[in-house]
Length: 256
Ligand SMILES: CC(C)(COP(=O)(O)OP(=O)(O)OC[C@H]1O[C@@H](n2cnc3c(N)ncnc32)[C@H](O)[C@@H]1OP(=O)(O)O)[C@@H](O)C(=O)NCCC(=O)NCCS
Image (tube, rainbow, N blue to C red; front, side):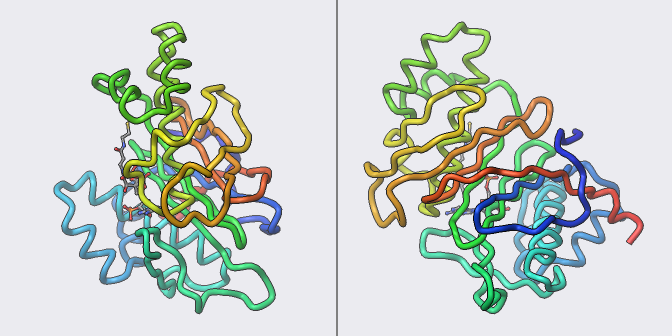
């Protein structure tokens, strides 16, 4: 799995007016896996150990290793020094000790599917990201009827059968990215969001029907194509902003 975006070992400056999205391949060798594992906290290691097979453990360890390396570069600290907290809805965030008094704090979100991890980063605004590997999904049209907005289901079922699964996954990732930005978990809120299915959609999504405390009435959603056979979307609460996408070279860690 080779991500489509330009490779950079370090992030460029991140102004408050932009979001960054990083892709990392989870297909790595034993030495990169060991390097990533050495960066994790005791809690992350025990979460990895609790996963049911070696494949899931590898994906967890590498995606969290990549997350730590990237966030460490944004906040100017060593990856193994980073400390995380969990917001009330379950969303992971950096502890306040990593805030810089001269700049807005770094917000992030992580997603993984298949052999791909994505990390979204912004300053001062909540972000959410989701990705899905293109694959068969049993009875996806019934899932759409249950979890999609009626207008989305109508648009999905009106499309030719050959593109319906792709459109289903595109819609799913956009909805999940929005709810991950809100940090509330996906729960019963999925059908309350209406997001157009267009391949290159970038635009506002109305949050006013969502239950519970949501810090904003709109979310800016951008659909992404991170790699062949993967779809993704990123959402930023409150402000429209361009998204710059990069690939982090996991294999370069083999020489560290
Ligand atoms: C977090 C959630 C919303 C997304 O889970 P997911 O799609 O399985 O996983 P993703 O790869 O998109 O995201 C996982 C990451 O989101 C972050 N996350 C966890 N809780 C979160 C929350 N409340 N808000 C935002 N982000 C959260 C974590 O960093 C997590 O990584 P980790 O598990 O390695 O620690 C999950 O609670 C959920 O309900 N998933 C259901 C997904 C589903 O049914 N998919 C079917 C697709 S066809």
